[in-house]
Length: 246
Image (cartoon, rainbow, N blue to C red; front, side, top):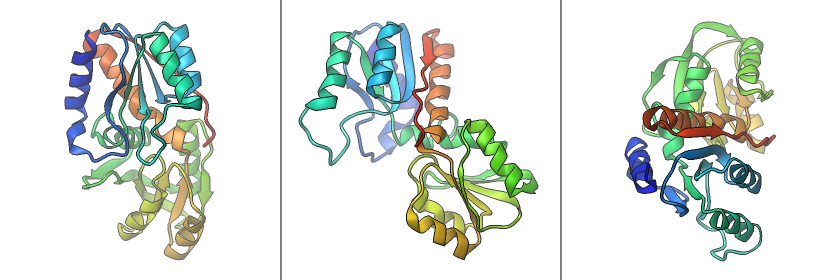
């Protein structure tokens, strides 16, 4: 398919225009016009670009792309090396940030809720979600389930009850939304990263906090979107997971 057709389809699917974001959503670096093979990944780092070149990809589709607000405008150093390799190999780079967190089917948060078997998910105006387990389980058992599904043991800051059922979550660097989870009287709040003050809030407000990894909580959306594109347009799509402990 043509690159214009691909980015137009994704823009409509993810309702890109509804988001005020920190980076441009859509085509960020232009390559060849005909798309047959796509590599998906979390971040457009050098290792992902190198792998895309090895796989002879026509496009790279990521959650974390380039040209973030407040970063230097000049294209030097590592940024120059990344973009140079994309241009030399005629590879398109497409990035989708908040739209790929918030989509009700392919978004990171929707996919995490599905992964953990959460039910009665409450529609919210923002990115944070609230759902519940079908039956209460011990916090240790829930912690183990999160670790198994994300292939990464989360950092657990205890503060809530021994048995949990009401779960709030938001992927990535969304630790600041713990106060929303507290207002919802959630038993657990899960995000990717953690801040120093999160420990005190969890203890003082009676909630468990799981820092499950920024990268780990944001693998699921771009992978699901890539699988959808492969099925919808018969494209060759490969998810490449570049390890990141954060």
